[in-house]
Image (tube, rainbow, N blue to C red):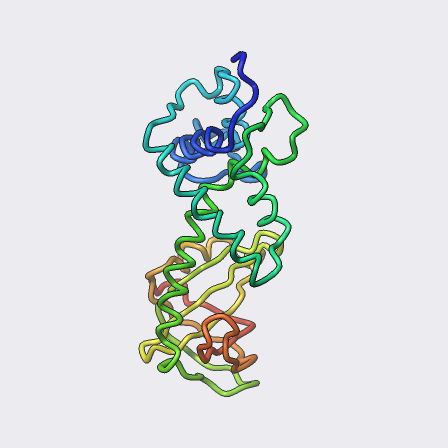
Length: 238
């Protein structure tokens, strides 16, 4: 075991980037697979093993490029401090702002900031995707229009532009862009069908039906958007 038990945020984030690359993403406890040669452990377990130089992380190497990515992650999340001037941050965001400049993260245990660190590469990756869609969405302010009739079920076709997994509700928030550049959004409950993720990948064209719940102007993009519920998706369309 290493004599060094206290790390800077930059060091632990760089280790988390290396773990994320080794595992192939972010694995939480309920997502582990005992039969898998790598994903049988969580990213947090690998991070602790790497920090403490334990055998379970002996195959993970922290590269110079991981420190470069760590710096990008820190720079990105420092922007949350400026967002705090415009809106209240979530509890999760507040914890991130506390972590990114820390120089006293002790891996012996008891520091409740550390469990968030392994998730930062994944959060950073997902937020970047969200930002790309956000820019495209804002460019459609004068183009997007409402589709369907409120309180009526309709059939639609479009391209999946953005998907965000809502872990608390085990659902997906999906944004679809129709051929006429109209925005349709809906939540999809993963308890219904977890394999729907394969169909609802960004870039896929999907045929679906849904009950038109509302026609609203987004508070964020200022675009007209149609919100559906009770959505059914043709899984043969990709």
